Image (tube, rainbow, N blue to C red; front, side, top):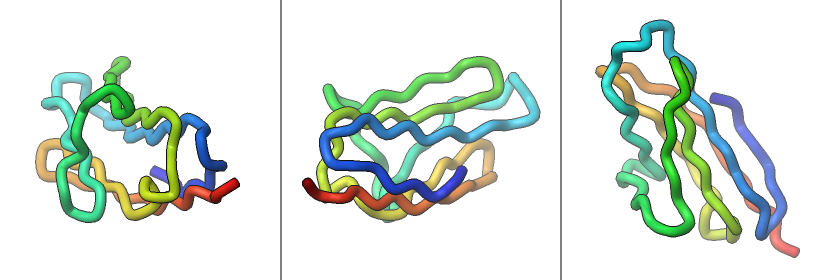
Amino acid sequence: MVDQTVPEKATLTLECAVTKLDLPTATWLKKGEEVPFDGRHEMCVEGAVHRLVIYDVTPEDSGEYTCKINGLTSTAKVLVEGM
């Protein structure tokens, strides 16, 4: 994953690519807490790419995000810039 800076109210997409297709679904964490999947947070998998999509981001969405798959992790920092 790569660090990102996005404007407030934008859609943020974090991607984590793996080399095997038969791995379990990713667990997404923000600051060590599991990301809730609700109307603003969505997780999807396309082949070997696992995505976390956050709609209508707010400054509270800033922080460190981690993707965990089968004991492996990847982390990125997100900064949401206010309007």
